[in-house]
Image (cartoon, rainbow, N blue to C red; front, side):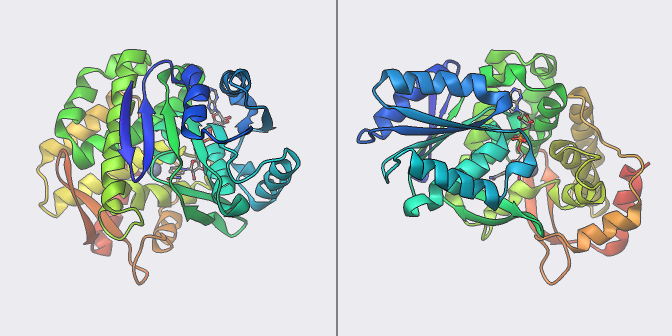
Amino acid sequence: MHEIPLLGSKIFAGRGLIDAAGALVKELAPRASRAFVLTDRACRRYAKRVSSVLEAAGRPTSTTVLPPGESQKKLATAARLYDALAKSGADRRTPLVAVGGGVITDLGGFVAATFMRGIPAFLVPTTLLGQVDAAIGGKTGVNLPQGKNLVGTFTQPKAVFLDPEALSTLPARDYTSGLGEVVKYGMIRDAGFFERLGRDHEALRRREPAVLEDVVRRCAEIKAEVVSADEREGGLRAILNYGHTIGHALEAAGGYRALQHGEAVAVGMEAEAFIALELGMIDVAVLAAQNRLLKALDLPTRIRKLPRPRILSALKLDKKSEGGRPRFVLPEAVGRVKHGVEVPAELVHAALRTVTL
Ligand SMILES: NC(=O)c1ccc[n+]([C@@H]2O[C@H](COP(=O)([O-])OP(=O)(O)OC[C@H]3O[C@@H](n4cnc5c(N)ncnc54)[C@H](O)[C@@H]3O)[C@@H](O)[C@H]2O)c1
Ligand SMILES: [Zn+2]
């Protein structure tokens, strides 16, 4: 088992952590008299394994099981959870353990950050996106009808448990989509890791636990490193948005249905590497290496049937833009990116032409 520190919180990575989580929660919240578990129907089996250890350790545990899906990430559900916490007799020491994908860890993290001005949160992410991204870094939140993640906090959980076993039951498309973020970490920060992904692409596609354990750990380390240097996104944290300026616009243009997040990031990285090539920041070998790895992992690099005008208007609305103009994170090499780059509109158009069919 590996332990990665992040601004006072601990990230544990390794096999067996689902069964070890209950005991670690007890150790890290020693004065709690009870516990509260949040999960969704698809992850209930993992949540049960955590709560049974907590119960056996003398922590009576209340569990709330939500229906799966992004639509639960809202204030009304948070209100239901405050109610359930209060009724269960929770106090400020009661740990909230969120077992599930990014929806559950974002929502659980938000409720824990705000209930009684903050109770300890423990996250057991069960999706690849959750393990390498959503559960790491302390962003919590819910959506409003006006947009995603419009209400939230920066609050580090007490601990995060990354167990590759949880990924064995993940639907194929969710798993592959998560690999888009994995490739991103290689591109922004670690050329050796990027090469390793290429060598191990078959094992990764098969979800071999030993490979997955290492890969997830390395991604979590990279994110922890970046977030430790810039918790509130004033500078370096922006590099995590490689592939996301165009990726978010593709997601929005598809009404959040056509593409999964990691798929949009994959196509976004292809487009943004094209922009870097045209700006003379990289040579074509970098674009080709990224393209090869994305394909080897079954990720898309082109997208059909998305009207370009819709993508362009979504781009202007990108929340990372300054003064209405999007800023880009662009590669300078495999393993190194530059953030805050302004790109001429014609070049963005050209990049979109290369990735849309
Ligand atoms: N806080 C952050 O920094 C951050 C970063 C990235 C994404 N996010 C958020 O994460 C959310 C997306 O996360 P996600 O992709 O994990 O979505 P999700 O939580 O909706 O999970 C995807 C689907 O997989 C199911 N599932 C989860 N684990 C499973 C398992 N082990 N076996 C079988 N089924 C399983 C879920 O029930 C759901 O239907 C979005 O709301 C996004 O805003 C947050
Ligand atoms: Zn992302």
